[in-house]
Length: 322
Image (cartoon, rainbow, N blue to C red; front, side, top):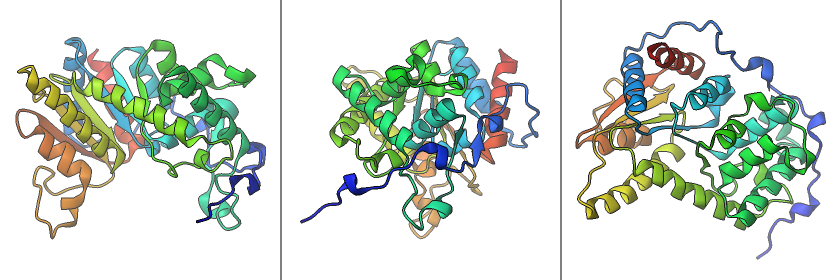
């Protein structure tokens, strides 16, 4: 059976791409934010502060839309304050973070570029990120650490004039675990002729185990899932099962912790799993994060709203308490 030859692709420079987001769209820490009316935000913020003061895990897992709404500096500052103990994301987060740091812009218009196959076929993003992944594989470090090292240290003499808005570079500099959880074919860097799928698989597998290690220390802590409907809850679920398996052998528990799910979707009752005839029954964040994994001693909270409001409000509530 034949397969597509990536060497036949026309790959264009980023300078020829139009972008929907620039560093000007990233919030400053003192930006004025509309108020949020969700009372659960205050509860979640209080749990984060308590976990931080007790030296417990505060794990932040997100999809790319969270950073595309301008929240990078809030996440960076929470790492700088040592409030976030682990950050996890999908591959798209790494791509947007790299592009913002490198050229100060990101986010192509899919509709504009898919019609003739230009979408995703960009040289700098595909070349440099794939080289960083291969280097991470060779050095036996994770995907996220490899991306952070690339941006923070300017490997291969690549310029990053906007490094200050890079979450990955900050995590690498501070030693905060930043893991990337991806599948092959999910991201535009997978299209590039330089993509090494073995290196991708090994490094994201390493990140899965690093994430599971943090989850194994979740007792008394907080797990937040922001804008990830599949990756976040599924990676968390498998990690928690492994962690509880080992903990039970030691007669220990991982049950008393707080979860929070941030999403645009709202539920009439997010603690009601519903029936198989209900569409929300199959919504993984609700079923996994808010119900099933906190039944035996934990508590889950759902925060509905645009990430350009809910994330800044959470940041301000947490930092005001500190």
